[in-house]
Length: 89
Image (cartoon, rainbow, N blue to C red; front, side, top):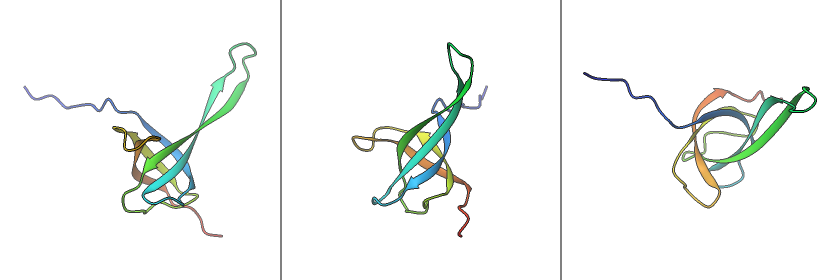
């Protein structure tokens, strides 16, 4: 029988905050968690460095990143798709 493979790699969605380095974007991922003691919903964020081979993502874009093998010292994620293009003002 053939079974569909499910990916064990994590995927996250975040906003590009920097695209200054070659083939790399910095992505800010925000999540909401409940405070353990007080129960208040608190916004937490993390920054990830993601590999962008073609340089197609720019500051303000909402993108999806997928976990991968280590590409460099700090880069363990790959930008996979554009969710929403940044609005030019």
